[in-house]
Amino acid sequence: MQPFDKVQPIVLLVDKTDPAMHRDAVAAAAVASVRAYMATGDSEAWENWLYGRFTKTVRRANPSTFDRLAAHAPSGPVAVGEARAIAFQPVTYEQMPKNLAKLQVSGTQLPDGEPAPWPERAPVIVLNADLEMSTGKASAQAAHALLSWYLALEPAGRQAWQEAGAPAGVRFTPGEQFAALAARPGAGPLIVDAGMTEIAPDTATAFVASASFSTAAGSHA
Image 1 (cartoon, one colour):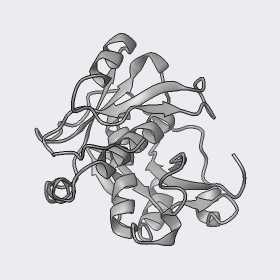
Image 2 (cartoon, one colour):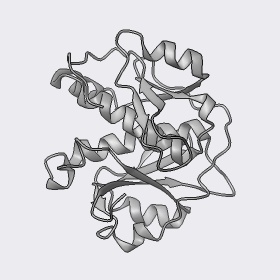
Image 3 (tube, one colour):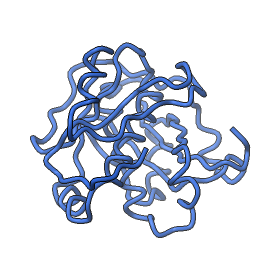
């Protein structure tokens, strides 16, 4: 990745004494990514990035640091169960504020306990369980999938999802079942990773399963 390429910063709250659950954190990060776009989509910051690689950087913050950063997040923190996440507009690594740039990327693996229940109408982000992605990596892929799904919605569908509280659930599915579900009608755009971290290039990682919000005929990937 070139230093002038844009990346969307996403920050997860990682409380070592009382950690949130893995799947809740992935869902919170994905929703935070989309909500940042919803709040600032008319900004020039999204140009080029939005129809490029959707590159994201998921970092961790302790509770006090997270609270300070959350005060400046475009749409505030997203909560799913005990998990908390915030996201910002895309920036280049050179332009990234120091208080974000200094946060660690490593150490974002959270325990995979039972996730919080999600609303019945929530779009469900399906991730490839065979890849054994860390919480940070899975969060980036889920965010990519949910934003791609959101961009494919008709305006009425976007509005309905927002009015429902912008919910999302997360499910990890073994590879063969993952591929079969991804091919079903109504599934969101299939995310194929560039292979910059953790997994091999051109690996299918995530998609949004069919949800009760209408989508446009086209899709963004």
